[in-house]
Image 1 (cartoon, rainbow, N blue to C red):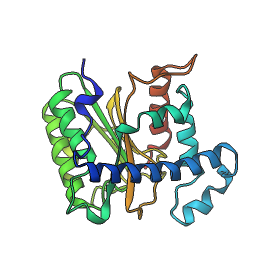
Image 2 (cartoon, rainbow, N blue to C red):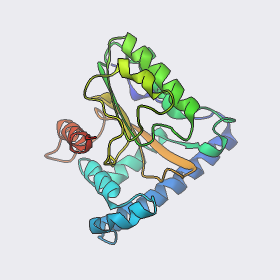
Image 3 (cartoon, one colour):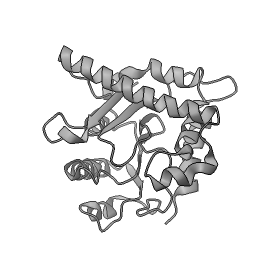
Image 4 (cartoon, helix red, strand yellow):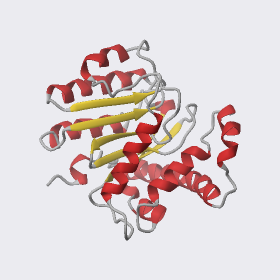
Amino acid sequence: MISIQSIAPPHTSDPAKLEEQKEIIQILWNSFLENYKAFLTKKMKLEDEINYTLFNAPGPAQYAAFVALFDFLEDAENQIWALNNYMYTHDFAVLDKAAEPAILVLLRNLISCYATEMKRLIMVSGSFWKNHLPTRQEIISLFEQFYEKNHALRVITMAKLDEQYLGDLVSLLGRDSHFGIYDRIPIHFVWAVDRFFYFEFPHTESSVFRLNMLLDLDALKYKKGKSKADLVKYLNNLIKRKSRC
């Protein structure tokens, strides 16, 4: 059985850079946690969503989705932080000069290590890497490799098909894919259904640093009365409710 270690992008082996990465991850996690707990304590309210939308800031709808996601797990957000070795960050300001984003390494590892077990890949995205088109182009190239291995591909994004490179995706996707959706799906992710789940924490499109995480849904500890099947149903419903053009 393939382990998460087999497909997880490795962290840098440079001690100084590794320490810097850990510090950035801690800062981004603390920022997420502050808003997450603000929603839990009703300091951030769903009826105020429009105020966050006007300023292009992550709003209560996103944090509500994460509260619901983590509520399937024992110890909720604390279990997530205990797995922080599978958290990753990238900096758009230096992306062309630094190592490539973890999503590309993950996709390559899935192709090389998990291809015989995985039958379906779903990507839910906002701008689909509009801020860094070389990454968008490489993702599409990797999707072509998935397609060649007869994997079903599904993409749901606010990006439009007439944007650069996205037209190349049409022949690879089923009819359940959607471009230019009106409503933002509150959690963005790449999901090797129904096991490996790589997701983004809330951020604005202008955010320089982004925090991401890889989870093995088979290895999580679920609350009594809840299961992986329940979590999978939640994620599918999250897509279904919002996937309209």
